[in-house]
Length: 222
Image 1 (cartoon, helix red, strand yellow):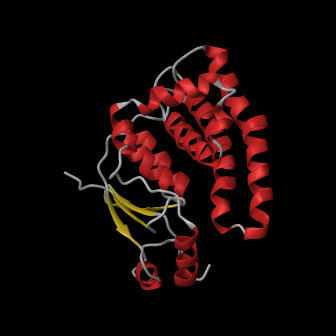
Image 2 (cartoon, rainbow, N blue to C red; image 1 turned 120 degrees about the vertical axis):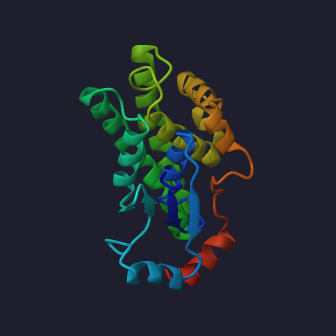
């Protein structure tokens, strides 16, 4: 029997958090080997484990996988979270890319210069309220079902829940005008595997504070 997946990344959300979320939602236990200093990262490179010399990297089913989308695609396929046919998969991919666009904007706040942060947050709020959340509210309204695609849980529901929680961290009022998304968030949060991941002490990562960001800058020189 194959061992648990092993996740190699920093002690932060970054590009690994969506992988943590998907594994947790699928009920898959995983281990983490945290990269705590430049030497840890250099060793992975020297050992030939980082195809493109960057993380995330996941050891799973005897494979060494890099590139976030490739890892997510594999997990979603393996645990039947990728729709029942090509058309459902196409919708899942399309919605996932939209989620990734807004998530990327939010992730960039971590490295945003202080004098630009206020403007960046204002832009994120605008696009959240006027572009992205209306699009997903419309999807749910169009079919009246409990999940985004195929009336069953897929990866895109988990990706959207993760995003909605990030949006609430920025401004909890942003979801107020989207009752179907609020209901989806509540429904997904009550699923046993998700509920467990949302509990304190899980492998879910908190947002970095200013001090942690500064320490990471000094350590990893970014």
